Structures are given as C-alpha cells and as structure tokens.
Length: 124
Length: 124
Length: 124
Length: 124
Image (tube, rainbow over all chains, first blue to last red; front, side):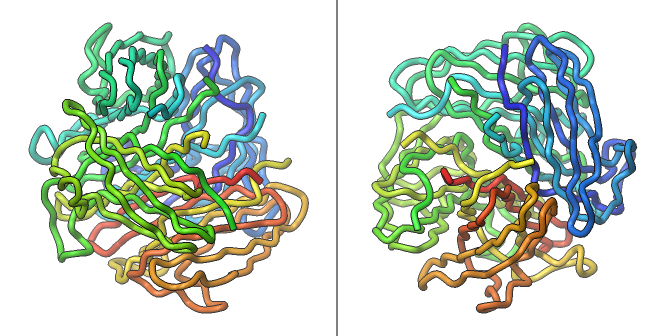
C-alpha cells in the first residue's frame, strides 16, 4: 500500500495558551496527524515558520511502516519548544509518501472547539 | 455521473471516549461519509492503521449505485470493534470512484464540537 | 479572473433538526458556498444523493459573474425540500469554473459548533 | 524550499457580528493564513467577491521570505473595511508560491466555535 506525498504544508498553526477540562484529553492542542501506510520507515522533518523570525527546525520523527502517528506541536522539544499564543506555519517532508492532516482542540473557553483539515500536498 | 477516486486516506482518527446529550445524535462519533454517484455498486474496503500495532482490516462495505453512505467508526465490528480514545488513521479503497469526507462530533464536554475535512485522494 | 472547476462533490450532508439561538444567524444550517469569479454567469445544478432512495434534483441556481453565493440546503425547495436529520451527499455542476466550500452551523446544543471543508473537485 | 501555488480561492467568508470573551483572542474573526516558505518576498493581492455588488480590492500584503502570515479579514482597511454579517468569497494571488488556509473563530455564543480548511489551489 502506497498513498500520499513526500512534501506537505500547513499554513495555520497556533497553540491556544490555556485550557479547561481534564488533562491530557482536554488540554488545548495543535496536532499534526501522519499516516505512513507503506512498508518502509518514514523519516519525517518538520520546519516551523513564524511571522517575525527565521524558520526553526527541523524537528525529526521516525514513523514505522504501516503506522499512524498523532503528534502534538505542544510536545515538540528539539531544537526548541514552541511558544503558545504565537502564530506559525509548518512544512512536513518525508523520504517516503505520507498523508498529513491538521487538527486543533481549543478548550480556552468552558467547552471545547475543534478544527481539522487535510494539509496541502506538494507535487513530490 | 462519475466523480471521485478509488483510493483515499484519512490521517486523523479518534473516537472520543464519552459523550453528553441524547443518543444517537449526540453520541461522540467519528464518521466517514462516502458518495457513490456512479451507476455501479462500490465495494469498499477500509484498513485501519494504529500507532503501535499492525493494521486491522479490511472492514468491508457495499454501497449501492447513486447512494450516500455515512458510516460511524464507532459501529465497526468485523474484524473487530475500534477502541475509543485510541489514535488511528484509515485508508479507504473502492473498485469504482467514490468521494470521501471525514467528520467528528465530539460531545465530551457539555456542548458539542465538530470537525470535517475532505479526505486525501490518491492518484487512482 | 478564472479559478475553479466545473464539477464538485460534498460527501457529507446533514441538516441538524433543531436549534438554539436567534434566527436566522443561529438556526442550524448546512451550507454550500460558491464563488463564480469569472465574467460569465454560472448555471449551477445540484443533485442530492441519499442513503436509501434515488437521487433528487437538479436544484438549479444562477450565479452572476464575479459574485459569491452562500446557499443553505435548508432553503432548497424545488424539486422538493430537504428533510432534516437525514444523511445525504451532493454533486455540484456548473457550465463555468466555480469554487465550492461546505459549511455547517450546528446549534442543537446551547452553544454552536462549526465545520467547513473545501469540496472535492472533479477533473473537469 | 518551494511549496504552494500562486492562485487560491476561499468560497466561504463571513465575519460574525459579535463576540464573547476577552479581546483580541476571543474576538470573532475570519482569518486567512499564508505561508511563504520560499526565499523571495511574496506580493499578495486579495480580491473580495460579494453576493450583490462588484468585487472589491485588491487588498495588498507583502510577506517576507520564509515567513508565516496570519491575516484577519476583520482588520482589512484599504481600499475599504469589510462589513460584518455579510457573506463573501476571496481570491488570493501571489507572484511566488504560497500556501493558504482559511480559519474562523466564532464566539457569538458563550463558547467559541472553530472551522478551518485548506483553500482551493488553482493550477498556477
């Protein structure tokens, strides 16, 4: 099974700075969900783009063959954590085809809100 | 009328583990909506990909010609039910063109939240 | 200015059967937003596909050149109104390129929820 | 790094006319998020399309190389502000490849709702 592309982008990015409700489910989070449906490991690199500084990254992740991987930007650490309440964009590249979707859970107010979209797939 | 592709993927997948509000409408659910606009039956197979185990499936569904089909992952049973509160991804394949959209209703908190996105269409 | 395609599909479709909040803004609604950025009128036809009956339509709409058009499925009347609480899909065709987006406002519970996605564009 | 297209459209557009919660985060807003991942400045022009008047624009924005830019339609001023509670669509063009995503935060009711989708990419 091969499906996906090797280059993706998410123009939206924002970690809500506070939360209501029990952790970890109801912590406000910004997530990137990645499917590696193929039979080879995916070496994934994520670059972050900001409004007023140079890009940061790559953040590196290995995804085993035939695996789903739901990453929270909140948990990114190396080369540096991502500040909350700060707009960003991201570019996700992989050495094998992957599928990328962007999801946010925002629990800043008493009830949670959700958004999700397929990311933009480059030609590669 | 022919529209769609024969191979789709949804990188996000998550069945919220609890709900508020009257069943069945307000039960938290993860749905895949499929349109078979053509004049032939669609034989659809859905494979599920997890974060730390091998893929499960195929789950098989037949969709009659010129029909919409809204499936809840919550209701999948064969070869096995899908655990709640467990991240997954899915690949949807069909022998005829279909259109696939992903929707979640999350009623874990007192008011419901919604997300939806067109799925990723493969080249086929 | 020309942008868009002449054939689109939305696999999701559902008119929530009740609402909270002041009309018309907070009436639960299922919408299809269409952009005709070109210099010719768009003659748009929408076919509805159901889970257990034959397709209904076409519903016909003319969109003037260089105009946006936000339609609520709730308001469709000819050839017949659309029942609430009933899953459907839709296919949108036009004689000139258009851009189509699907949005729902669900106010069944006390606070509203939203979803939106670009529709699926056919090859035409 | 080059990713994106030079022509995009968002068929949905609507600035909710009121809000609950602290400004600026919880002000109801309609946003367009743009990534310019390349090494050249992006000269972006946004045209707005309405239901019953001629298009307005272009609204012009420069996005530096390797930068994210989250714009709120609420803040557009030149050639004119955008009225709230008024449906519109938008076309976003750039002289270099960009990636465009559409997001709304709606806080008309006590708790906020969110929607987001990748915009429609033209062939250019």
